Image (cartoon, rainbow, N blue to C red; front, side, top):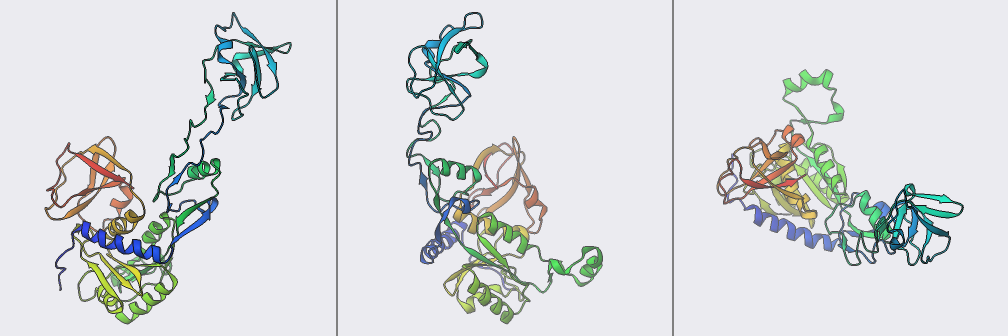
Length: 398
């Protein structure tokens, strides 16, 4: 068996991949301006700043009566203040206007008395509680000020972003639009649609077959980035079969993910096949799990060669695809127990987060349950020989 040699440091591998992606995305014009209704769950390709203040006028934050706060001072249940009720866009001394939540305050008003502290008697307003200036008022720019960043580049656009964008009169945003093809290789794999687990379980065991699951995981990871994904049929461990699948997938997509066959055994043909069809820029990265990561170019399109082991494949996708397009939120908390590591290698450790950080599993590239149970991950740098219980560590939330 051939061994991976001259492993590339993670930082260097990311630089190679990210630089290629940046140039490629510009070349294919992967950024598209879309209506905000079509932007949900997509990645913002451009920072957006507020063009105006929000709110852009002083408005009521409660139903009640707009007043000059100073006219209510001293009001109580035993000593109500009496005000004239008017219906115009300006009030004067000892006047009040009926107002509803979100409505613009009339000129000269600087507060709102909640309706439950008022009573209308013979056309006059009795106020039983005083208010201070700006009470129950949303002031100009209180939510967002002109020039504030409301959407960062690389941020996933949520329903709350849609509300903010619409409130500010922004109808379109620029988002990344990419299509990913997903190819899975391996003679040991069977397609999910062809299996009835209640009938075929014994057959799977006797034949040493495994249900293809990586394609579904990668499909979901791609969709989580707001991109389109297409899963292709399982490819047998033969170069010609893989070449045909690669040509078809590249014809129909912007980016290709190949899972399986990225190591160096006699059956791991993915890297050799990609090299014959194009060029390899990275093969072998000093990380655990995920060492046999490969990145190449075929027909000027990026090809990511991922491990057949689910956790390793997920880690590779996270570090080289997801992290390119969006930043992870990070928190710092103490460790619940020690984490061992090896100098010269970056360790990707899945963790659960409560008041402390608890490692789920330190080793095992195929332990799928560690992915479903984790809240995030810790990266142990190359120059750190593990962490001890109580150490503060950075957790990237997923």
